[in-house]
Image 1 (cartoon, rainbow, N blue to C red):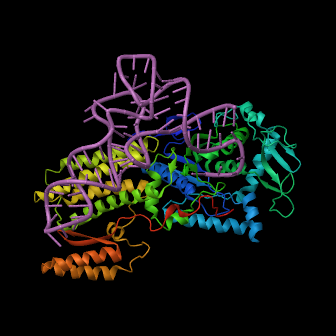
Image 2 (image 1 turned 180 degrees about the vertical axis):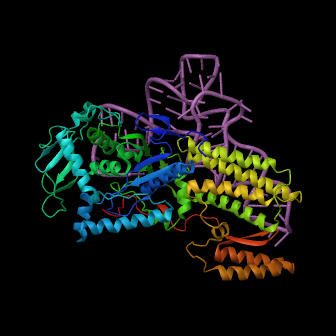
Image 3 (image 1 turned 30 degrees about the vertical axis):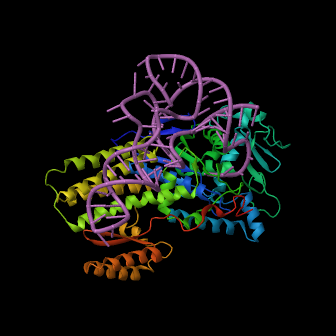
Length: 508
RNA sequence: GGCGCCGUACCCAAGUGGCUAAGGGAGCAGUCUGCAAAACUGCGAUUCAGCGGUUCAAGUCCGCUCGGCGCCUCCA
């Protein structure tokens, strides 16, 4: 599989697409910054997770052995504050929202990372690195804190493309009397009384945010990792600091390719906790199927911003329906008229399937261009539909072998994108939807009744039943050569999306 | 103030110097159908925010203008 197109990835550090070559042939070490578990995640977190899930799947699809590590930040100010507010321990808060995260990701079909390290599980590793940095003169203790000496790391600012002078010129650098330099950042933070604390050479405290990722990435993936990802907002200072402390520690290059996903916007602004303009994943999943959400989030290139809107979600729903209708058509064509493979005249369609696979692969290889890849998928759907219609009109049948090949190709693509996990028939009939299978018996009874009416050429009654099915069950009928099938009306969510106040915050 | 990103049809969205500017959604018309639905076919940007420049050739490179956004503070 790896003789295909070389994978090119945009590296935030160099600002260019680079041909991807892992440090160890055939193996990829991938670290993606996870979430701080102090609240439910919003759709922006879902975007990041889904983007890297697709990147991972693309690499796996190419035959790479991917080691995917994603941390949980389970100790930080926000967790402590939340715990205090709710009269719980930090551990309880972290555990609760870690499981909330898992629940969301499982529903979204995001594959679990190979390792999900916890910050609190790597305190000794962090202390080791911090001690070494002090010894090297790259860090210093001040009070109970330990700070990284930024001016000891000459290439600081390389990732975020800014110079030390520029950063100082910015008005928002926090000045502190304990810092030698305003840009120095905390590696270890002394705990205040009553706060969670771990013993350290500098007194009881807890890790600074940035050091945990360096410690966990290096522990689980080695001192140089192939791909390090995260949201674009982590680029500075988080990733810049990770580079500084890691490279000051090892003397080696920390990351080969930095990958940053763009934001999910709402009303043109970044969806974020602090702005309060967010929808949690749970809220969105209450109205849209996880695959619809995935398709929506993968319909834009991962580095570009996406505007969240109900209209877009509904469009994605319609688009996904189209693909499921196609998969259903393949299945029914196979059932209705199985025909062996091997008869001539199908070269054209086989070429198209192969062409699709090449195009899909090429798109994903070019910096994970999911929108382009989806375009190739829709082209295949149209071409296959056209072919099936044309064969049928000429009284011919497409062989089951060709149908299988088409389906396999679509499913392979679906596996990379995390789509088509449902049975097409079940998807179209709306199983798993809000009203689940409750309506099924009644719908099927009415469909049977209508079929009888049609047989008796009582079209008035047949049309009346059709109307009732649509109005009371939102069910649309398809009279096909193999009988009548039904599916729920192709509409998106069943709620009013933008009605919630944008300034409202779920967590304050 | 510094650094950076974006502006493609009604909506979403590919495209990064060169055939007729992908694809999806919505719309209209046709084929098919008892009627529908789906599917298929056709229509839909002489044009890529605006202006100027480079080039044989620009949505694609450069400059300016207008508009929107991000990072510089916790943030996917």
